[in-house]
Image (cartoon, rainbow, N blue to C red; front, side):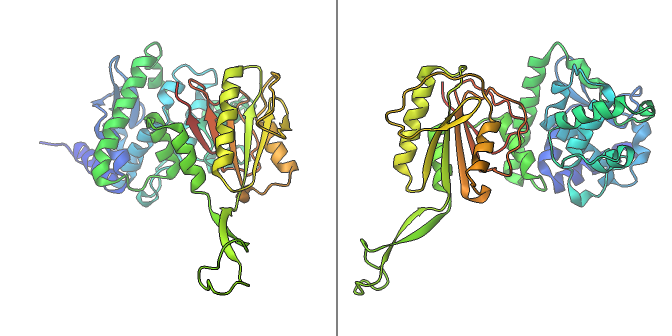
Length: 386
């Protein structure tokens, strides 16, 4: 016979499956284990082979409804989606900063229809304690870096505790296997939700889930499709008949053109080989031929310089890489974010953060094996084939 706590847990999982099937499916595929020594209701842990959901029914009383418990389960699913147990299995920052930072990151993506999560650490919590506003929907590392300094300067920081994530440290030393198990759980959950749909799941979460299972498609096709979907405008021309009134020779016809300006930036830093730069140039020329819109080509390393003629430009290797120089350049050129599409050919190595000035129609085309240093990512990352 099932106990009242078992019934509450089962009902909570059912409610989560109804509202956000992706989150619920992740929880279903996590083995569950009662842990009397646990000082919170739920916590992810590593048993040497698999990730498990530890729980202590003693702390279930904080949830007044099954929906509140469903939010607590969604919270754990989001930690898994963002791979927090692996990323912070051996963190250099204070444990409290890691606990708060990761909780703030995931609590912004909880299903709204399930109500509030009791005791949730949020952006408002930081503001109430430290009178500082943090950016919304940033990566957990951004929050942790700020909180690490705030907690160091706070004499009462020992009394401030979020949810404990010490179980994450159990995976340290087996991260490759732990990563594989994460990927398998996400894959199984995605298969389950093909029929039921993903439900109330924000687009940022879906993008993160998709990044854990990269789709093997030609990067050229992905980029071509993306650029072809940019909005078109009609331009008057007297070299074509007016389709509606073809007998009126005084009326101009129309041709379509890209309404956006396209800027192509080619990484010329020392970390990129001449062979890779040659490939970048070849693909940039193909883009110029395919599109009727305004296409501008530039090279960059620590600074940006325009390429007057892409066919005759000869490369001279530059120095370090500064992605910020690209967005500074666009601003100086008086480009409008809504009317500007940016394609950046690069190996991905550069600074970790930048100010994009709201230019978010950005496509990062990375060399095979390249990894973009910018976190959080602005725009879309497209990987070249090896």
